[in-house]
Length: 473
Image 1 (cartoon, rainbow, N blue to C red):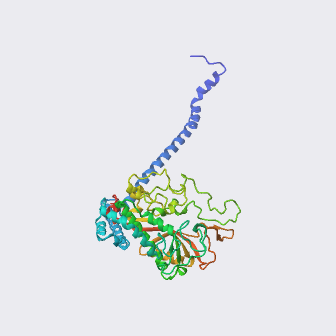
Image 2: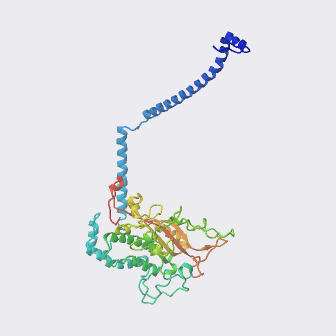
Image 3: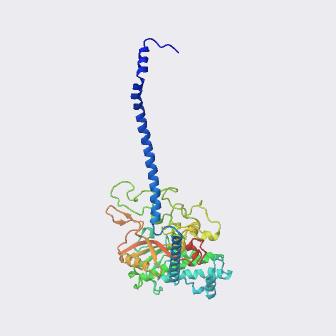
């Protein structure tokens, strides 16, 4: 055993002699804190476990105390109620379909055998070739009936009395309006026996419509069904205009004296639903800052950014160059993105952007097949741009809303394209008149939808793929 130095031997001997008392003081100082720490951790774990156990017990207790908790009886009740909702929905669908029966009237010019063939048509079937040729040959006359239903003259051909029917821009222009209408000065005298037309429908717009219903080859069955649905909507709008002008005897006292544009379907679909990013909210130029008259947001978003316009697909009947699709836009005169992928089937191409959802967004063929909005009804977009006596705007809107087939107006613009001065006065390209005989006239632009009911289909309600119905969807 090694020897300890003499100087520390007394200390070691003292520690050896009194070690019990020394350890008795040191051990509690070390062990007590360790014991307290361990006890605290253990209490925390116990509290956590107790909380979890209590939560599980409470959950089980709440389920036990619930009257209609998921059990066999509960499942039967849910299934029964679901079936009742399906039945109610189907009944309402059938009612809507029946209420729109007056709209779905095929023209008599097509013949009783044609109408009978359409009534017998099932999903996936096609009309006989002779019926397709007959519709092609009759479509011209069907379109030419629309001006008469509106109370206007057919201006798609030269007028025997020599009245101007064509010209720049959108055709004939009402007196007192310049800018987008082109201005034609004093009103041309109405020839005697002009057919009693109360409203003038721009010749260029009539020709655009007639061209879209012209086929060199016989159309397909889908083309016929979709084209006739479009004609039904055009007829509905023309009838509404005639109703509004019902008490007029001449254009001077007609609430609507001039229709610049009437479009529905593909030409009326908007790349920016609701005008988002197109500066339709115009602020008076009171700040003196550059761009103060442009709008709320300045330049619209670029392609690919949030709020950027959708790419208008090509369409076999319009190609993007007809109606509103051909005016301006991101892709020049056609308004069509050349890089936009088109459906491979010709019939699928016909369904591109002819309907919208309840937010006004145009539906592609793929979206149309899966959109819940499109199962019950097809929302056909429309645009009506006309010269209207501003005192009768309310009457016009009420007539549209209470129509037998309601016409849903979602956007109203007065003097669109006009500039706004510092005092808030409207002027510029489309604002105001020249103080002529109709000082209350304004340029009114209405955009909205017409809900055309689809054939009732129970499979579409319960979630199966809806069968293709007539017309054409």
